[in-house]
Length: 216
Image 1 (cartoon, helix red, strand yellow):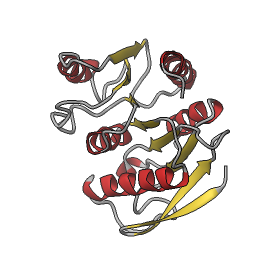
Image 2 (cartoon, rainbow, N blue to C red):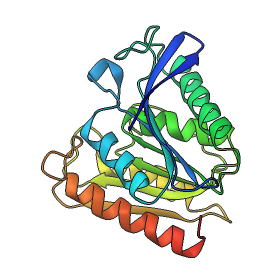
Image 3 (spheres, one colour):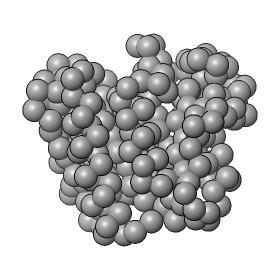
């Protein structure tokens, strides 16, 4: 899990990168929760997502967005953070030009940024969005959503009530050509304390299902 430094619009971007197990390995980008709420690339949910892709042979990158850890710059209310995500995906693709698939996975604020990135990168094959803050940010930009993916949420989430996520999911499910999975974990909060195993189990099972349908 070597440390990498990427050149970003606001200076260096600090990341952790695990190369794929073969030259044409699929790639995955992991996005962390809100910087102003203490979010960083070593957040337990972000690390769990990272490890799930690494175990399946993906070339996987997680990173600190601007102003977090060793990454330069300042929080930019999502605009600069989306630019950082695009820079990180560019780096992943440049280092893995033969990649068979491209995935984006994010938690909380990272899920919001990840879904925006998805809209700008139609080559994306799949996404994972854990606890997307759909009551704090407008997700109407997902029209149409270019890829199938998984939304994972907790029934005990008081920060983002499940009904808020269900509105987004129901809208996306009206689209043809994509399949949106929505899973609720009983008793899990917005922060997934004591429920990290559920993230591992549910996201892992979803990835295995997708990779069986379309091997990477």
